Length: 409
Image 1 (cartoon, helix red, strand yellow):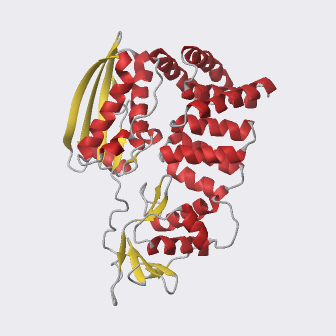
Image 2: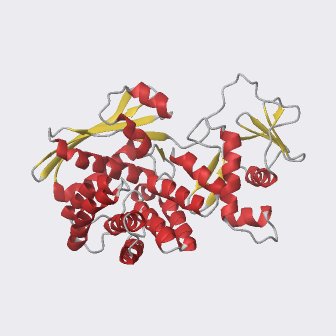
Image 3: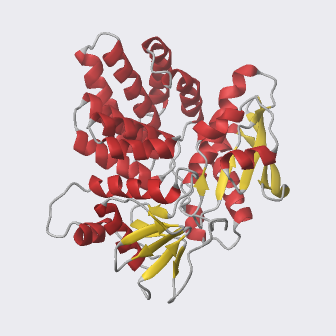
């Protein structure tokens, strides 16, 4: 660090006096959070690992690693002021944290005037994937169009330089008309992906277009006609085309990160999509509808991690809310552990399995590890964020739970 005073957006950090101000007004920040801020500032925008933070902030003290996340959440709450889905303190999954928007001040430099616009909070572009239209005319095909969008969101969220609006948020526009400007204003996004799906027999036609929300101009559009056996390669192809349209110079290695294991049997995937709406309700009677579909999927493909995870979730619902039968609890844990064994690169499967393992196996340490793995794979995965927040609340880690909940919503 070349100066004793630095700015981060509208904030000024005096490292020597250990004082943080916003537009000249002192800001209250806990001592540990301030320590973390100083360490991140000292790195000049480079990544600081969790181990380094532990060694410098808690030197000689044995503490739970989750303390870092609690104090980073408190730091973000102050710096971000609850006004943006982006952040000055960026998580670099699997590596640590970095501070963006950092500028050194020379002697006599002025604090940013109060009416000056703050700089961009993150170098990450933000994209929203809107629900694809079901153009088949068959209401029962809605699940297929929604599943297609889920796969694209999941693929894009694995690109670590790209921030993706969660499905939970973007699907408020399902069956609603909205202009690109409205979507951009709602989520603060730079890019919007929209499209449609028409399924007929064993063929599917997918149209997609990427729009620059700031200028309302089309960056890329294409149409794909494929047989259903090709569907997984098609999902990867669309995702990579979007990435290429946003930043053509993206390294090939980063594009390859989009790809993940898929079920080799399309009928198993189709059965899971049919089950999913009933899995998500938490209602045992709905779980009873989903379970035979998931069991059929596993009969077709026994190593299908997502089917194991969601079947474990259904069994958990039946155990917790419909009789507390030991055989349901044991089966829920068994399928959760199978999901972990088969789904090492599937953030959703890992997160759902972690939730079951935490609540039904009472193995919090394993669950926390699995949530961390899921968030390393996809730091905007809706299941990883929401279910980990639930488990951390159950563990009594309220601040950490609140931080994850804020990212989820």
